[in-house]
Length: 393
Image (cartoon, rainbow, N blue to C red; front, top):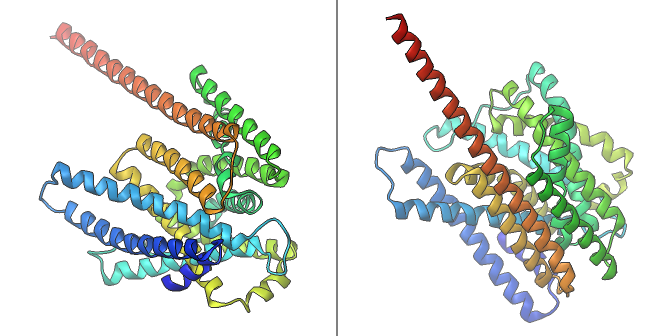
C-alpha cells in the first residue's frame, strides 16, 4: 500500500530527480508514522502504570504527538487535493463521492476498533459500535447535517483553490465563531478579541487580492471557503450541545456522525449528477483506490491525534501547533507545486496567522482572568460564611 501511494505521489513531480526525492521522503514519512503510532501506544499504556514519567520522557512524548498531528494533518490535505483534482470538470470528477467514501472508511475503522476493544481490552479502548440507537440518531441528526456541510464545503474549497491558499481561504472560522456564539448563545466578545478578528479579515481580503493579482483566484473556491468556515463554526457549537446525548464520547459521536452522513450523501451524489463519474471511478487502478482508503484513514486519524495533542499539551498549545502547522503546510505546498508568490501574498498569510495566534492568546488570558475572579469570589463567600458561623457561636 505504501509503495503504491508513493507511486501516485511521484506522478505529481516535474522531473526524475524530484520524483526520487519525494518518494524517499514519503517512505520516511510512512515509516515514521508507524513508529510514532507504536511509541504512542506504548507511552499510553506505560502512563497508566504506577511509574512516574521523567521530564525527558514527557518532552519526547509531546514531541512525538505534535509530530504525528502535523504528519496526519498535512498528509490528509495533500491526499485530498490529489483525489479531488482541479477545478476543471472531468469524467471522474466526483467530490461528493470521495467525501462519502471517506465517511465509509471512518465507519469501518470505528467498527474494527470496537471489535478490537473486545478482543484486546487492555490494548484498545473504544466504545461498542455497530448499531444505531433511534433516540441517539434523532438527537445527532441535526449535527450530522452541519457535519456533512462542513466536510463537503472543505473538500470543495480544496478542489478549487491551491493547497498554499487553502488555509487563508478557510481563515474566517474564528470570525464566524464570534458571530455565531453571539447569535446562538448570546455570548459577547471582548474588544481585543474583535480587534484580532479584524486583523484576520484584513489578511483574508489581502490574500484574495493577491491570488487575483497572480491570476490564480477561484471565486467559487473562495465562496466555498467562506461557507466552510461558517459550517466549521456551527459544527463546533452543535457538537457541544449534542455530545451529552452520546454519553460525552467523542468516538461514539464520530461513529454516529459518519454513519448518518453515509446515508445523507447518497441522494446528494445522485442530485449532483456524479453517478456517471462514480461508474468511471470503479475502473480506476489500485493506485487511486489506495489513495482513497488512505484519505479515509487520515480523516479518521485526525480526530484521534487532535484529541491526543490537546490531552498531552493544552488547548492553547494545540491552537498554536495548528497555526504553525498551517504555516509549514503553506511553505511545503509552494515548493511541492513550484509556485512563486509575491511578498504581499506571504504577508497576507502572516497577517492571518498572527491574528489567529493573537486571538488564541487573548481568549486564554480572558479565561484565566475569569477563573481567578471566580476563585476569589468563592474564597470571599467562604470567609463570609465562617464569619457568620463565628457570630452564631
